[in-house]
Length: 493
Ligand code: ADP
Image 1 (cartoon, rainbow, N blue to C red):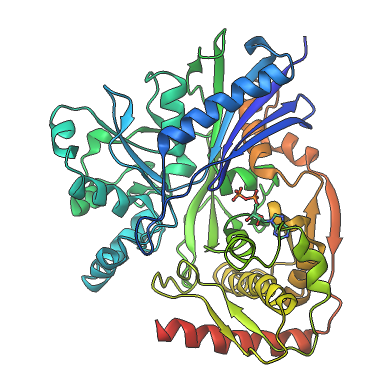
Image 2 (spheres, helix red, strand yellow):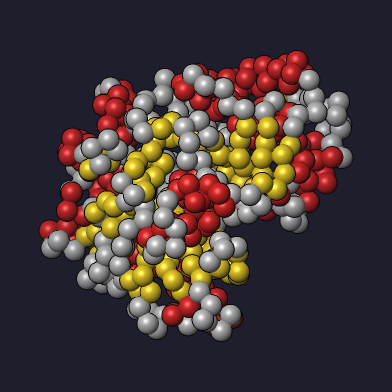
């Protein structure tokens, strides 16, 4: 009988189910985009029921399509968009409000107040995170404070909180498991990632009741099983998307880095087993805990990456498909000195300015669609470079190469731009679906198909290395220009 690992990769714009064979090659993928809600300026919501229905239906679909039954599935791994916050009623199984998405900025002024009171330092010391609307904490508080039925459900002990991982697990197990893994927990801004427990101190500051929170576990764990697809299937792996990609990219050694370019861009550098705070406004986050060994990483988050390409496609109608940007980049005018700061939903690391907005500099009568596309892709290279600089300062090590993945790295022009601006080696692996691959590895560890992370390292395979083809002095002068521009934008807003 053929055996597979089934991964649920629940992203920001689409949900995917990926089947891996026992050599960790992709056997099949099914995918569905879902609705995005923007009810107010800076607000972003998802319908958690729609997400669950899609995930369930996609699992049925992929099994049927491949004539498989639940017995063909060794174990399920879950990986997910992180921080996105759901509160639901455990009696009805229904969310009491839409899922508030990580990109949502509605709690910006509340976060500003925490900073004015100086509380952010304490929160950073405990969680490793910057106080920002990005994380779940202030989103939970917003729902509790603003949704009518919360108090009633709370008093009746019917209210549960979870990020997408917990929500999907709870639904898969029909309410039997209310768990989250340590990588997802470390993104909530209420989790003490050194003590590995919810922080009573922060919960008190935000007035969030502990009883609604899930139990936190390692990444490869017996999360329960699902009986919704026939015989029971164990759920053995769970990690937030960026940590899962770090595992999929086999960044298990201190100093190894990966950068994912999906809806947003996330650069993570393994910093070893010790929790260290950044002095350059990066986040310290749990990379994973596997077989009792916990590793931390620095993380730089750029909120807008592939979503800027979607904006070029959907709002400006410049392209029909994001893949066209590769060819159009090559047609851009090399003399054009156009810069774009794509702060469409604020600026992430190292600026942390939720109020910043997108800005073009240097538009001329000659500026074309191709130039705007080039400026958009280059902006991600500049931002990546700034994160590399912060990481090198914090870790006091030189980053010589980065492993890249995510939808955007199919674009060779973009990879060349990254190598040129950063002046370091950019390495694309064979499987750029590293997010789902990481969750498959976790499920494999839990089910005994793999024993440890060294076995994962041996499975990692390179597809392509891209090196710079411009001089360091040219890249430095362009970077200096970029820095002066992004500072203008940051100071303006
Ligand atoms: P997520 O997992 O966050 O949903 P993916 O890793 O699937 O994202 O990447 C999808 C993103 O990558 C989309 O925003 C899309 O616009 C962008 N993208 C996909 N292919 C290309 C390409 N060839 N060039 C530039 N951007 C691309």
